[in-house]
Image (cartoon, rainbow, N blue to C red; front, side):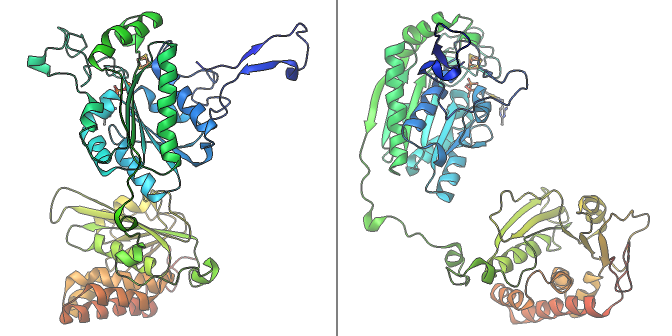
Length: 502
Ligand SMILES: Cc1ncc(C[n+]2csc(CCOP(=O)(O)OP(=O)(O)O)c2C)c(N)n1
Ligand code: SF4
C-alpha cells in the first residue's frame, strides 16, 4: 500500500502544515480509493505484490513528466483489473489480452493522449499473444507495461506462458515440463526480432537498486510517449508472494534467484524514431475515405446542425435476416454522417445467414458518441412481430415505434411509446420488391421525425444502388413511406387521429 509518510513534530495538536512532508503519495493517485467503502486507503493487492510498486512507478513518472491530464490507462483482466480505482487518469478496462488492440484504437482516435497498456503475463503472453505482437510490429505509439510474475495470479495460480521449468502451478502440479508444457516464453526477446519497436527493456523488482532501474525504464517508456515517438515495452519481473506461497521478502529473493537467470535483465533496444518517408501515411478525414461529401470544415456547429432538432437520437432497427434491417441502420448512419452529425452503427445478428434475427443500434448525435450500444432507443423500427415484442419494452417513454404490419398483434401490451403500423412489406411488394420494405420504413421515419433530410437520403441511395431498376424501386419505396405517414390513418397503441399519441 502506498501511504503518506510524515515526520511527527513535538506538539501533537499542531496544525497539519507544521508537518514536513518527506514523501507523499503521488497526486496521480486518487486521494481515496472508491473500490470498497470501508477500504478506501488501501489497494486490493496482497502484501508484497509487485503491482503496487509498478503502480507507484507509473504514477510518479506521469507526475514528473506532467502527463496526468493527457494519459489513458488501459487495464487488463488479471490482478491489475482494478487499476482504474487507483490511478487518476483516463481509464479503460478491457477484455482479457485485448489491451494492445484497445490501446491502438485509443491512440489512433486520440493522438495527443499518452496511452499505456498495463498487462500481466497470462493476459499479455497467453490470451493476448496476437495483440501484443501485432501492436509491436505496427510500431503503435503506446507504452506497454508488462508485469511478469510467472503465474496467473488472479485465477489462483494456473500455469502462465512465463512459468519457469519445474515451477508448480495448479495446472502443472508436477512442475512445468518442457516436453509437455513447452518452455517459458521470453517476450522481450520475441519482440526484439521485430523492426518497429523503439524501446524494449526487462527490469526486476528484486531489490531497491533494481526498483530504481525499473523506475528509469518506466520513465523512459513514458517519455517516448510524451514525444509521440513510438512503441515502448517494459517487462517487469514482479513478485507474487501469495501464489508462490512465500512471504514478501522471500518472494523478492525468488525473483532475483529464480526468475532473473531465466529472464535476463537487459536493455534490448533504445532507438530513435526514423523519419517516415513523406512524413508518414496521409491523414484523411472519414468523409474523404468513404468518398462522401462532408460539410465544409470550420463551419460553426450551430450552423452545421441548424436543421437537426435533436441533440442525440438513438434508433434500434430489428427484423429477421434478409429483411434489410442492418442496411437500413447503415443508411441512417451514412445520411447522418453526410449531414455533419456524429454517428455510430452497431450490428448484432445470430449465426444464421438468412432468417435468423438481426438488429442494429444507430446513434445520431451532435456530440461525440461515448458508446454505440443503445439500451433504451428513442425509436424502434420493428420489421417483424418477434422484434416488436422483444424490443418494444425498452423504447424510451414517449419514444416512437414503427411496426412493419397493418395492425398490432393480438395481446400486445403497448409501452409508453407512440406506435405506428406501416404495412411496409406490402407496400414494397406492390412496388415490385418486398426487399424494399426497409426503404418504406426509412421514408416513414424521415417524414415522421424530420430527423434527417429526405434529399440526403436520396443521394445516399443513389450512390449505393447501381442498378437502374432497383434504384427506381428504392426511390419509390422511400417516397411511399413518406406519403403513407402523411396521408394514411395510423393505428397505434395510444393513437390520436393521425395515428400517434400526444
Ligand atoms: C476472457 C477471459 N478469459 C479468461 C479469464 C480468466 N482470467 C481472469 S484473470 C486471469 C489471469 C490473469 O493473469 P495474469 O495476466 O498473469 O495477471 P496477474 O493476475 O498474475 O497479475 C484469467 C485467466 C477471464 N476473466 N476472462
Ligand atoms: S495474487 Fe499475486 S499478483 Fe495477484 S495481488 Fe496477490 S500477490 Fe499480486
